[in-house]
Image 1 (cartoon, rainbow, N blue to C red):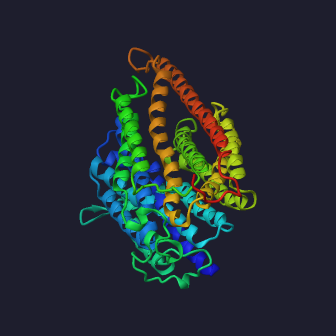
Image 2: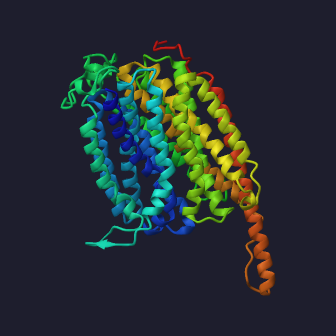
Image 3: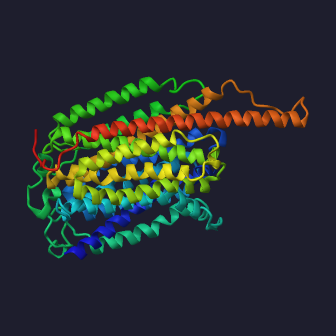
Length: 535
């Protein structure tokens, strides 16, 4: 029993790793991709949808596909997602323009976003409450390992020499996406051989779960195949809340569009920013209204205590926002203040991401002994300390020695420790038949923090830098002797570096406060003794 479950966990972890790698794979090669699809280097804001398109698809698909996995079983949905992931990879690899590359990344995001909650729900099916945190920590580690390796993985594959076959480019950044096709096929084979065809309850061996079960075997994907165990009319009738899914995706898209500013020199938000954000907020309100009144709910967690649930999702949201700030600004800090190239900057970021991976495993072990709430509070508080230390980085980072490495490790460990307790807490207070949608809710909250975070960080970051450098005049080598020009250029460069340093350290300080808020919200997470009760 235990060995069979470990094999299934390994297969699930492999598909999570594959999707996680591609979530961050463009960080290193974004400029190369933008240049090849016709985005000029002085208008890199047009490349933002390459990142946000993936994240938007990632977030929007999770609740819907999490619900489908509850109804039709984990394995069929994993197969469908792997197929879509391969198709999106091909579209991206063949892209010759902005629209096609964004479309390909969005398809990848939709497919990749569903793989994590489905795998986490599979753990909820196969592990009991006492053993579940450790298994969740392992899957969380696979997710964070993808985050850690993604930039390096992309940078290394992009070194493959340019190779044309039948007029199709296979090398360079294109290789990053072509290699996903055979990897997805291998992952599908592993899933077919190891993951049961329908959900099983903890204590049921995988051999007892018929691997050939059709999708309609157990309504709601109820553990143990008990008909009608899902408990909500959505599962009984077999319907899915498409309207809710569209409303959620539309609300998120409008918020991201409202935060996107093509001319950050004039204001934080574009001229259309506030109206579009207001419409997005209104659509989000309509989504909430629909979810309350609709008999078929996208995020049906009616059997869960609302206070602890919302607190846990709030922690996931804030942790996602903090992670996004780190991914963006540590990369920028390394490239500007340390003078690293893209791959070198990814190696600097890898210190944080490696600690995040270790923290994910550690969080699972600690939550098993101490309970989820205590570990989540401690993790967010520890991360706040790390970001406060980062906000005190000196301008001369190259001479700071191990200070940068230690601070990144502290922040990474703190955020990593939070991953497993948040997931375990939501699954523990949710009915077994809702593990898929509960897992999706956790990851949706986290990715929503990342999605809104990247839009807000881009708007504020570009504007803040422009305001700090608005008074500077770029020196020109005309009408002055070479020595005077070089002196003025050096002075200008030093002032730009100082402005960048101020921008980055301010953002790290803001992130410290975000983590402190997360620690406070984590105090409202469910206690160890709380079980599933509806309010």
